[in-house]
Image 1 (cartoon, rainbow, N blue to C red):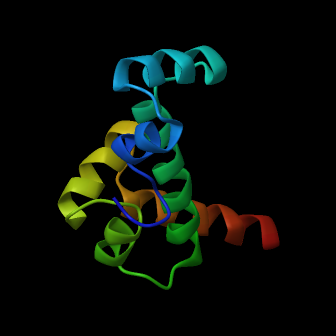
Image 2: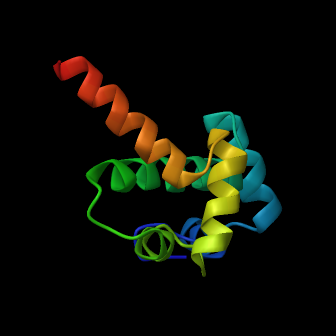
Length: 100
């Protein structure tokens, strides 16, 4: 994980709770598990970074807590329903169409 994306272990330590108690409290308060929340957060950051267009997929992968571009690409595909490159291309094309 990166500095901007805390680990569940770090969160449980910070909260002074056991992992299971933390998971229960987190899900009750936010409606999702800590892992689902962290994954959604990582993908939101990744979408923003992809739209900027100034970083490689490898750089984005590391910034959002993945060890490789391929692991990031697979996670992004599962979460967003399309590969990161395809997402960026589609958004760029949509943006161009709106400015015409």
